[in-house]
Length: 192
Image 1 (cartoon, one colour):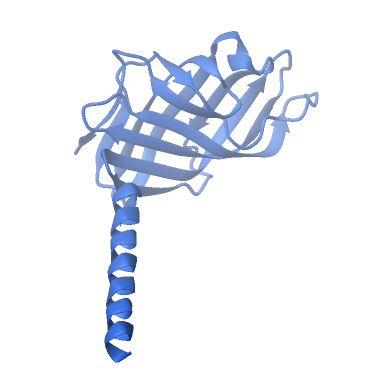
Image 2 (cartoon, rainbow, N blue to C red):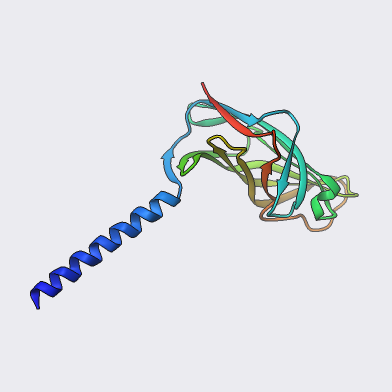
């Protein structure tokens, strides 16, 4: 009886270890603060295909950012959906750093490259047919794929206030896009 108990105990421990190692291989491993780097799209305006979020289909846009001392010091990011990206309403989306928001950057190792996640970024949406803009905050996730085009995801858009004399329809909240650059474009970073 003791022999069987020990055998099953060791077997279950081995299975748990194998399961944990398998999960770790497919998930991002946090490395903490990002290194000093410049990052961005391969051109000031590139084409993406978005398969998730409010913007679907072809989206134009570009971005450039800098991280120094583990903090985001510069970011210029915009998306200009073709045919409103299928929403019929959202005509522009921008992210940036304004000195007021308390953005936070984290750096991860993923199976096929690196991932940069920046939360609490200043953001705004331009709604079709309205002068005011929805101002808020959002999260930007950029995956730099070894030998690949990469991926840009904007999530968690939260509206804070409208800028303008009129109130447009309800802003588009939550996930904005899940974009992959169209060949030959890509996203990349350079360590500084």
